[in-house]
Amino acid sequence: MSYRILAAIVLFLAGFLPSPASPIVSLLAAALPGGGPLSQESLAPYVPTPQPVVERMLALAEVTSKDVVYDLGCGDGRIVITAAQKYGAHGVGVDIDPVRVREANENARRAGVEKLVSFIEKDALNVDVSGATVVTLYLLSSSNLKLRPILTRQLKPGARIVSHAFSMGDWRPSKEETLTDGEGFNRTIYLWKADGVVRP
Ligand SMILES: C[S@@+](CC[C@H](N)C(=O)[O-])C[C@H]1O[C@@H](n2cnc3c(N)ncnc32)[C@H](O)[C@@H]1O
Image (cartoon, rainbow, N blue to C red; front, side, top):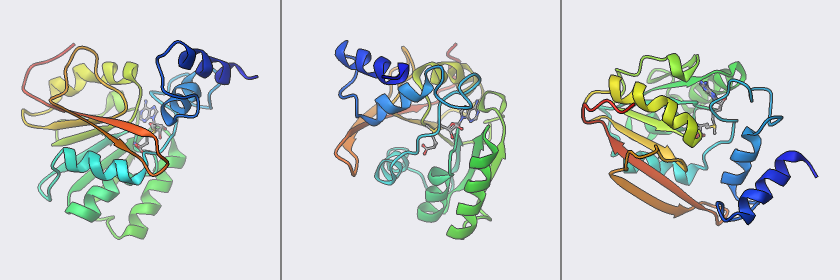
């Protein structure tokens, strides 16, 4: 049995996680050493958010055509592409993996929203997010905590942050919602509103 599967089962037996087959366990297991080519510097491995969860994240943030949505660790670009398609929002996706950035650009072109969105190959910890009105995250709790001081310093009051699955330490979300994805797994999403208070 591999170290990653064993670690996932230990977390499950310790009562932290709902099932070793759960998507959250997969994400955590993939983030453990040996979990992939990006494991050293990665904020999270690539695991896409299911489309019904993407839709709820954007609805929870009340995205409109006036918004600029940044997805930090954008994967195949689905969150900003959906925000552009469904709401006419502008979007910026950031990912350190050039394969994902290429894929996201191709998906935007296919979806016909390439004028509304752009994708940048960059470390999310070094991106200026001051132009965002909505930031979406599907990383890990530890990564959210690394981003927290950056987001709370740079975002203007009223900007929304939505995270799939992972919270942000002692910063209590203003809303929290659990839904069932297409495969019957529970997914929790969290919403915070920037209020000008910098949170280290
Ligand atoms: C769990 S996936 C989420 C993908 C997408 N946001 C979604 O919800 O479908 C995390 C993504 O973060 C990217 N990533 C990991 N570390 C990063 C970093 N330091 N800067 C930017 N992107 C990063 C990975 O390449 C991966 O595509």
